[in-house]
Length: 275
Image (cartoon, rainbow, N blue to C red; front, top):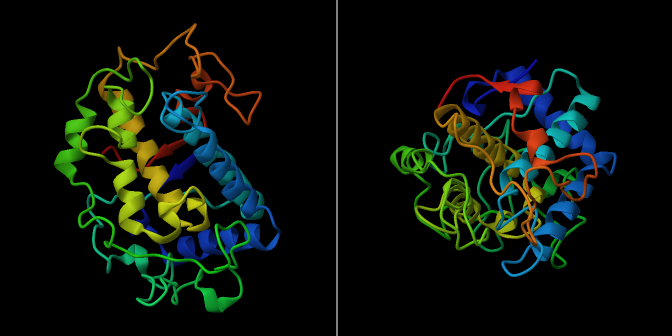
């Protein structure tokens, strides 16, 4: 059983194995597919039309499936690798170990946002962006420039206390746990972190920054914690809802996965500790 660990507890070997596997997927040309897929759904998911990966109840199961596919791809390179998560309620500064040269690398430089340290720096020649919005082919970040503070532990707790998973109209204006986690309502968790990192993380092509996976792994962990705290509550809606994915509907781009299939993460992996 795979165990996803807090990035702050990874050993030097675990960090190196994770980074090397990510770089190998990039070298093989498989990594960019994830960037393209994510951007496709960012563009197509709208409040008043079909929505699957974002602004919708399936935001959480869709990304759980997306993470799982990426994790399995990493394991095809090195079976010992599992996705780590970034607890941004604890590691919340620009100098946290996450941003060290042995894992994600640091902030972007002031003149153009280019990341110049770590394994994904522009100068390494190993992380050239192919799926990009403009001619700049290097990873960019602007930590803390777009929003000053990452979400706090108390803000996360307030969202975990929301008992209803989701509600009509099932979009970015909905009440419920999903929308507060995603960040369109309430204290704004997921979206705020993307903006705090800045650069590529502020775009639909956010998987160009490998911190995307660590961020979404923590979002997935929060969903798992919500499920544990609210065992009588579950995914909504359950059927007959236009433009969104009901409990037993297939989620694009996969024909073999429904939200119901993604409710029990423990069939695939566990987390090292509870929140």
